[in-house]
Length: 243
Image (cartoon, rainbow, N blue to C red; front, side, top):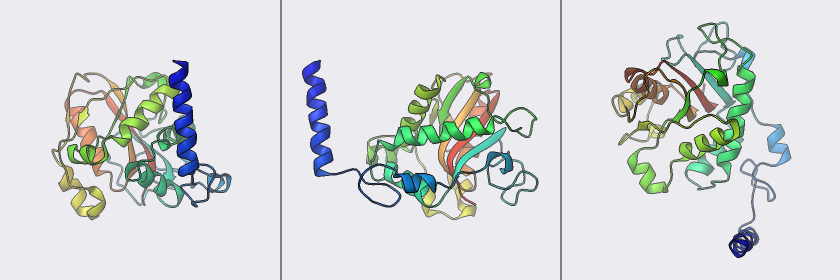
């Protein structure tokens, strides 16, 4: 065991020497997110955010949704620009797997802040005592085969490890076109009927994770699948919100 740990550390040291860690925000060597980029992260202030779709400044009148998202509440950590946008790309397409715990910590930070503010149903937007399991919007089979991993599965496992909540890996998405290449009107049509639930979620209160919310099409499709199989409620949390 000691030899194995030593070999791992030597391998990590060699990798760092050959490919030094660079900040995902500014590309300077040193840390995954340097102090300057960390200080400039575009956190969404939860007391001002729309409780339905998570858009900033939408608490009283939201210009990004009509209040009919199928989730009971949506919590978004950041606006989708700058460092958060690069975090998503670097994890998904750059295979920088060390970002998974960083993203999980950001999601938990936003959830903890949101716990002080009400959802449309009057209850806190997040309460760990009202979550029976953590699930995530899955990658398609093609994306999994191309990358070799499901990035949100990694983030969800890290979040569960930090919080003590249980993982509910119940959603499956065999196929769908990449949402990033589609316009706002095409996103919902692209995802309709593409997700299904494996396992029993009857009566479960679920926390649904995703990386980015734009129109909410992925969250909506996942939520519909979960609720159709008997889930009691779905609360969404995303790393970044586009508006």
